[in-house]
Amino acid sequence: VKYTRGEGNTVAEIKDKKLKMQLARAEKAVKDAQIKAAQAEILLPSEAGMLEAEGMEKTQRFTQVALKDAVDVGSAKKVFTLRLEDLGPYTAAYSRNGRHLLMGGKLGHLAVCDWQKGTVTCEVQVKETVRDVAFLHNETMFAAAQRKYVYVYDNTGLEVHCMRSHIEVNRMVYLPYHYLLATVGNAGYLKYQDTSTGKLVAEIRTRLGRCDSMNLNPSNAVCLLGHSNGTVTMWTPSVTTPIVKMLCHKGPVTCVAADRGGRYMATAGMDGQMNVWDLRTYKRVHSYYTPVPATSLDISQRGLLAVGYGTKTEIWADALAAKAHKPYMSHHSPGCSLRSLAFCPYEDVLGLG
Image (cartoon, rainbow, N blue to C red; front, side):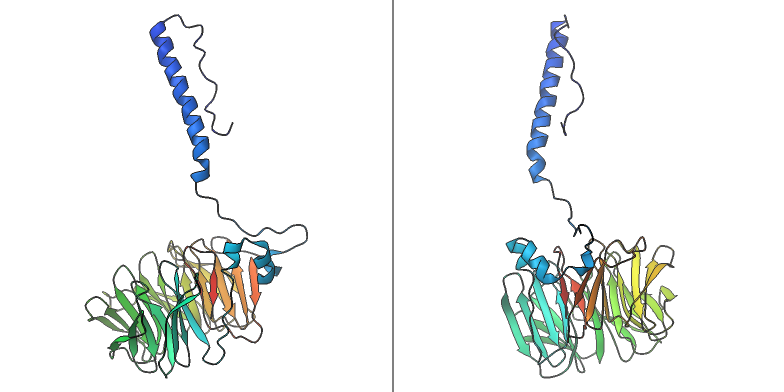
């Protein structure tokens, strides 16, 4: 019934033999198409699923333990906790294919693992402060912003390069379609390094002091910087001045994130506000309140907004285009202060560091 195409033609009363044969063939083709469409239904991509509460239940009260017991074995294996208490806090980053996880501890511990198999690809102790980590074009190379310089390592943990022009870097993002590594740090300089030729492409002075929050607009590769005066600036390597400068908060901006389509941007600041902005009009759509200033933001490929503050993490569904009145999911990590969070590409997984 789902694939029927209306009532068929009646060919029994037609006297013209040629027309009768043509209509009979057409009816047979329609019936064959219906059968094939029904058989191919199983090959169609399944619809995205969400948590559904029954009765008085609320989805934000579901715990990870309860979800792990309710899902299938394959999904349950994706829920795990690594307790590395001696060398943290950690910064986490996923590879572009979502297969590998890069972890960087503040006290010098670097590790790359295949988180789906549970195997460690490489592990190294650099014996100095690590502020940020990022994969390069794939999981075979990654960069670490250490105490003074930025170092590049391969998938065996071997140091292959030292970027001495990037000094005291706080945040890094990688532009995969341009092979550029963008960094910003205490000096307030935004620098672009070409990882294919090893040359410094651009060195831009932001004139806004130290910068601790940085992210990338995945739709157009524009770098988003959050500053201590409450402004968010957008940069490209070919322009020495910000292409957009927005006053987003009354205090310093702690984190910033943009969605996959490049239409919305989320910012959080020390004023306890989390604002959602429309990047087509550069106007605020709506705002949310966080009891503690947020330390990390991320937006998934399906538009889920994750915010971490203190020991708590909240995930908001459908919170960009319209204002959501309650979080979709919530997770509490007692005794663990959140430093970073990241959605895994192509998976319904959120990594917390």
